[in-house]
Image (cartoon, rainbow, N blue to C red; front, side):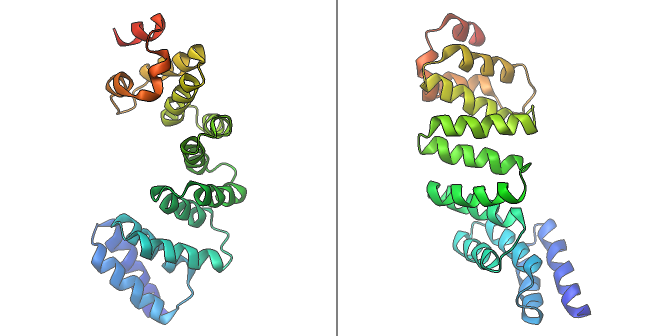
Length: 199
């Protein structure tokens, strides 16, 4: 068991240091000693996800899921893999499970909202994005998506209110540039309040 722990800890260390090949080698050696260890499988999957080995990561997340894992991040990460492949319906199912296991999982609520928005399930997406803001009132990605959805729904007041909030925050993103060109905001471009935001 000591040998297993050493390999596992080395895998964690190398992953943190960005030494992905070494991390993979150590996790694989650990799994030879304990093939069904959830944590090792999960961390190996995360390494594969970080280096865009999508199939390997997805297969490992599915394997852990089939072991009846109660770790919300397993379902969240599997959802992310599916979202990246534009498999929105299946991604939503995985986020459902992650949220069921951890109702305060902000990123799962957000990503489920993204998947629903991608399917044009606008009212359902609003619910998810608003839930993220209940859990984290500074979650500007949700505010922006809500601004886009309300624009699409021809509700300029709601859309512009969210844009005002975002532009008043320090987010690390240049929302002024994003707002100028995002087609999702086309329905509010002629509104005086919108024009004043960009002036």
